[in-house]
Length: 219
View 1 (tube, rainbow, N blue to C red):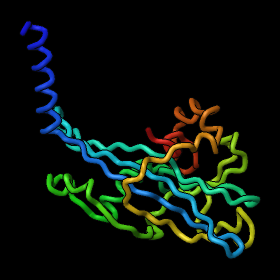
View 2 (view 1 turned 180 degrees about the vertical axis):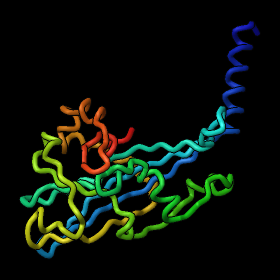
View 3 (view 1 turned 120 degrees about the vertical axis):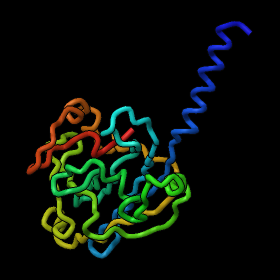
C-alpha cells in the first residue's frame, strides 16, 4: 500500500474514533397546535428533529454538548379568519430561539444529558403530552403571506381579538415520532423566500417582536 493509501486509512480511522468518542444522538417530535373556530377544531402540525452532539472542549467555557435542529414552525390556516403560526421560539417577543431544542428533553423528560446513559437514551424517547401554558411557543398572526411586516404576536387567550368571535385556543400537543421532518413552509409563506436575507440579518429587540428566519425554518 502506498503512502496515500496509508494516510487515507489513518484519516478514516481517526474519524471513526472521534465519532465513537463524540457521538451525536437525535430525536423527532411532532408539535400540533389546536384552535377552535365556530365550534370546529382546526389543527396544524410540524415534525422537528433535534441533534445533540458531544464535542471537544478546547476552552473551559465551551459547552461539552452541542445542540442543533431542523424543521419548521407550525402553520395553521383558519380560512377566512386568517393564518396563525406557532414559531420555533418562545417568549413574549420570540426571543428564546433555543426553545425547540430543549422543549422535550429538558422541560418534559428533565434529562441530565451530561449523564452518558441519558444522552444515549434520546433516540428511544416516546410519549405524547400537552404543553402547559408556561411552555408555549410564540404565536403570530399573518395578514399578508408575502410581507413579514404584517406579522403580529398573538396571545393564546386573545385569539378572538385578532381573528374574530368564536376563535378559541385549544392548546399545543407534543408527540415523539419517527416521521420525516416537515418541509413546505416557504410555499405557504412566500416572504420566507423573498425576504430571506432581511430575516436572516434581523436583530432581536428585548421589548419588540422582530421577525427572524430561524423562528420559522431550521436546517
